[in-house]
Image (cartoon, rainbow, N blue to C red; front, side):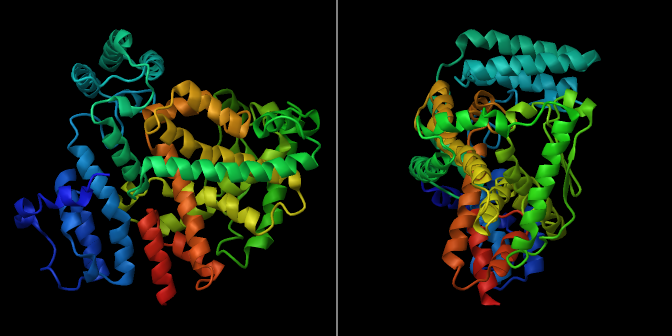
Amino acid sequence: MMDRRSLLLAGASALSACATAPPAGEPMSDGDFRVLVDGWAQADRRERAVEIAAFDPQRLSAEGRILYDAIAQGSQADGLLAAFPWGRSGTPYVVSHRYGAYRRANASAAAIDAETTQLRADADAGIIAPGAVLDAAIAAVDAAAGRASGAAADAMRRQSAALAALRPRSRIEAGVWALPGGADFYELALQFQLGEEISPRTTHRQAQAYCRELQREADTLLRTQGLTRGSVGERLRAFGADERQLYADSADGKAHAVADMNAALARLRPLLRDVLDGADAPAEVRLVPPEAEADGMAGRREGGVYHVDFGAIRSRPRWTLATVAYHELVPGHILQAPFEHAAQAPALQTRYASGYSEGWSIYAERLADEVGAYADDPASRIGYLQWMLFRFGRIVADTGIHAMRWSRERAVQELRDLQGDSIAFVSIEEDVLRMCAQPGAAAAQGLAAMRIAELRTQTRRRLSARDFHAAMLRHGPLSPPSLAQAARAAGVH
């Protein structure tokens, strides 16, 4: 790995006149440090990274150090990515089906045309997206042009034509490793998304090992359901097609599924009260209105309500749904969101811990299992394990594509072998395509969950479950180094 901190500190002397912190060695209050961090948010990404790298965190209290650790390693990656002649904050292609000015509600023709110009310049430097990403981008831009009008629509049509012109020059390789400096770019993108410097290849092997453990557990439980032949993926696929496990595609069937999710949540709450503040937070599942279902809403959270989309209810076996309730509501997103709001985290903290929110909710699924949510429901525990195979299989696939040089087809097949059919609202093919366009984003979410679980194991003897979870939640989004610091600070009090 590159010595990233040294690269940044090499430029520190040139920026010393810009320093806004008190002289080195002087203690700094938590409030003053927060003001300093807000100032750094306004700086050029490279200058910001240098100043953060040059700052001495020993000047901070244990609580103030949490904020420093939340931004330090992410800012390193951000500063070095800013020096790349291509890409934007970890995203390699200026336009894709996942990002671009055309996706904004009030996109201007000038912004779209500027990205089209950059698209052509990047292509001249050898930065062209894989063919499948280009195809998806063309379809997305064309759809946006059909909804727009005037100059913006014209600019979108020009952009679609520019994307189409690149198609004959597109790459077969799915990963950014094939681009100039692509291996370093991926390491930095993953560090930027996670907020921690890691080795993609080591991470790949660790995630594979964890998925093998999950499959061994799933194998044992599937045998109790009479499914003994074939791979775990094949048996999960067969279990998901069992008519006894499916709801009717009707209003009554969907209402039944919603009731089952709320009942699962009600059973879990008493089990959480001794380990987590907020176990009784207002939260419930409701069905999205039919018109939203027709538009493919795919579920959304609103206050204490998770609106679930059962437009494809025949692909949602009953044993997969309890974990969805725990992930989306309590102890997942809807429990976590008020803590994040109360923390009023600085913008840089949120920027450099982008995997945290999803990471917490993945950990929440594990917590539900740990307290006994599935003790009398082996079928729903199979669903939990399948969701975990989806979550952590994404680490395997993301690092596989961008560090291990997997093809898109291999990534799809590996995920099928792990989890059977898609368990999420997105298909396996579409999920892999997202990974091609947004390297590191999917992996960072699963890795954030793994770090929280590892910390829980490491701190079990000195921190109660309630104190540990309070430390993980009350500061807002945290990167893995700051999660560790939050646990240390909690142990001091």
